[in-house]
Amino acid sequence: MPNPLFGPEIKLMLSEGNAAGLREFCESLHPATVAEALDSGFSTEQIWEVISHANIRTQASIFEYLPSALQVQMAEQARPQMGQLLSKMSHDDRVDLIRRLPPRVTEAVMRLVDEADRKDIATLFSYGENTVGALMTTDYAWLPGTVTAAEAIDLLRQQAPDRETIYYIYVLDDPVRRPDGSLAPRRLLGVISLRDLILAPRHALIRELMETDLVTLRYDEDAEAVTQLFARYDFLAAPVVDDKFGLLGIVTHDDVLDVVTREATEDLQRQAAVGPIEGDYLHASFYQVWKSRVKWLAVLFVAELLTFTAMAHFEDAISAVVVLALFVPLCISTGGNSGTQASTLVTRAMALGFVTPKDWKRVLKRELMMGLALGGALGVIAFARGALTPSDTRSGPEKVKNPFSVLVPTGTNLVPNQHHDVDLSVGTPQTVTLEKNSRVRLPDGIDQLEAPKVVNDGWIYEFPAECEVRTEAVDRWSLGLVISIAVLGICLWGTLMGCVIPLVIRTLGGDPAIASGALVATLVDVSGIVIFFSVAKAILL
Image 1 (cartoon, rainbow, N blue to C red):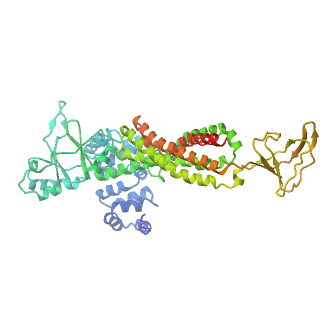
Image 2 (image 1 turned 135 degrees about the horizontal axis):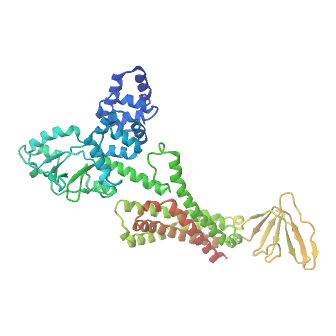
Image 3 (image 1 turned 30 degrees about the horizontal axis):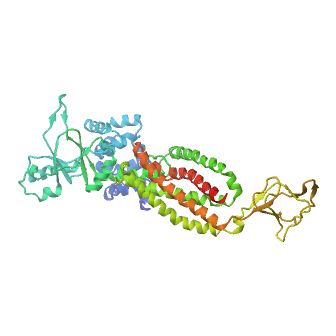
């Protein structure tokens, strides 16, 4: 969060034309702090005016820390100093900026860049997005292997001001020309750290000091491969080579952090059923965020419609034992939660390289045992909750909005008790034949039924609208058993679905992150309803 005093102070210096103060502000603070202060409450014109008082290298550093959307707005103005600014930016950062610009703006900006920088931008721009080549910078320190340590330090002094990092120095072979006359990338012979170079004897040759057991990256590898390599070796930078081991550039640790942040953000967004959003949340356009969210919500909504079909299939079971409907959300959420847990763990394990599709047997066995253990623990809790359900709730109260009639044998007097309840025995004919003993509670204000009508088969009693019908209460132990077995089965099924689906998606070449969260929960919801009511029908009906 920027210092709240920066904004008013900057605006005051702008209004007073305090060039010395603006230069001091830009050059004395860290570029990230300056960019953060300029990101709120300032127009692009004002930002240009502020940073223009600093030297061009500082301007480039501040510009790199500005939000990408703001960078694009400033570049669209195509100020003459934009060419100089691009020349001092990190090579990979300026290519990322060019990728985000509209074609017309790109053309205007590229006219401001000198020929050498245009060639470098075009080279990096040619690599595919999300590849190592697109991530690397051609701004690295290098030495020939024939110089001494003392000579090497003198050479590095000349290179250092224009290099992104000099902690690793790459030792290169002499240049070789291709058949078409162009120079091929210099072959990478070895690497030496700045620490080793400083501590080396002054007259020792670089080729005798360099490390030749190299860990490199290919330019066409996926950018995610970089994160795994840096995590394994704790590198500050890694060389990028072509098919003939020619050095094309390097990837630095700060770029790897950007990749890690971007990939983690994309995975979290996919797990929440949101398509990857370009830029940060507040600077992304409303339409882009809506589009990313609505397409997945629509897919999940259509999938959830299957729960309606499943519930309709078990309508008779719900009508017979109304209390079952109260436990549906409890049981279904258990499957979604267990599935989300499993999919998140397996997806993350695959992202870190700990699990591959070839390990499916081990993963399945582990999650099978875990699903049984988790389901057993939750099943005990579910049994207790089901068994402790009050009798009135287990009797399945249902409000009947319309009047209805009941046919009873001749001479049967239906007299409400003190609670205005009327007891009806099994098989009593009415609009729907009762399958269980029932009690009918009369609406408030009605104490008695009207005298019955005499027919050939018996007497007909007329019941008013808004009566409450309660069936015979379900046995508490049977209900507890149903809930516990259903929870065990749904938890086990959700766990298995959560671990298998990411593995299948990875095998098919997709991103397993889309299998997490909402998608697994939706699929388990449908199957969970089938499991729940199947168990209920087997035990209660």
